[in-house]
Amino acid sequence: ARERTARADRMESLGQLAGGVAHDFNNLLAIILNYADFLADEVTGDAADDLARIRNAADRARSLTSQLLLFAKREPTQVEVIDLNEVVAEAAELLSRSIGENIRLVSRPAAEPMPVRANRGRLDQILLNLVINARDAMQDGGVVSIETDLVEAGHYVQLTVSDNGCGMTPEVRDRLFEPFFTTKPADRGTGLGLATVYGIVGDAGGTIGVESTPGVGTMFRILLPSAAAEITSTAGPARDEHGHGH
Ligand code: ADP
Image (cartoon, rainbow, N blue to C red; front, side):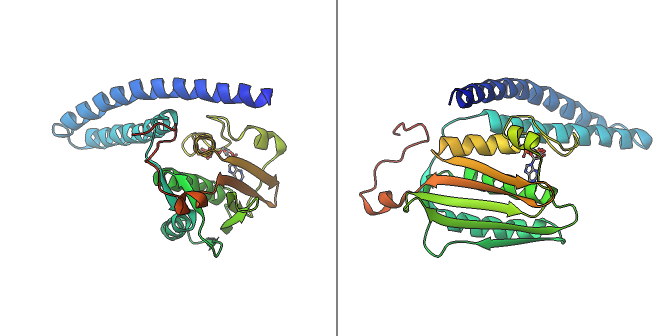
C-alpha cells in the first residue's frame, strides 16, 4: 500500500509539472504559428515549402501539448449516470472505421445495462487509448475485443479490452501506467495514454489491472462501481468527481 501511495504522489507531481510546461509551451507555439501565418503571405517557392514544414511541426507540437494539458488538468468534470454499453457501442463503431484493415474490432456487451457514474468524454478517452494501444501492439493485424460484464455480485461494472498482439515483458508491465513511459518512437508515443486512463479510472472510484504474455497478447480489465442503485433511488443533485455539489 505504501508503494501505491508513493507512486500516486509521483504521478501527481509529474502531472503538475507536465501541465505547467505544457501551458508555457502552448503559448510559445501560438507565437510561432502566428508569425508563420504572417510569413505565409510573403514567401513563395522553396521557402514556402520550408515554412509549411515549420507550421506542420508546430501543429504537431501543439496537439502534443494539448494532450499533456488534458492529462494534467484534473479539473472537475460533469458526471452523469451512463450505460457503459452505449459508450462501448458508439466508440466501437467509430473506431472500427478508423483502426485499419488488418484489425478486427469485436465488441461483446453484456445483455443487461451497465450503469456507471462518470463523464462521457472520459469514458471515450479510456476506450480510445486502450484500443489504439491494442492496434499498435498488432502490427501484423489481429483482433481487439471489448467486453462488458457485471461482477462482484453486481456491485461493479467490468470493462475488458484485449488483443492478441505482441504482449509485454514484466519490466514494461510494471511501468506502463507511469506518465511519459513509452516503448514507442518519439513521434508516435507520448507515454501519457495509460497514465491518463489510470487517473480517470481512479477518479471514478474504480481499479485497473493488466494481464499480458509476450507474443500472446494483453488484456486490460477495468472495474467501475455500478450506479444501478442510483437509478432506482431518488435522483440526487448532480455532483462532480470530487463530490462537491453545484
Ligand atoms: P504510448 O501509447 O504513447 O506509448 P501509453 O501510456 O498508452 O503510452 O502506453 C505505454 C506503453 O505500454 C506502450 O509504449 C507499450 O509499450 C505498452 N503497452 C500499452 N498497451 C499495450 C498493449 N495492448 N500491448 C502491448 N504493450 C502495450
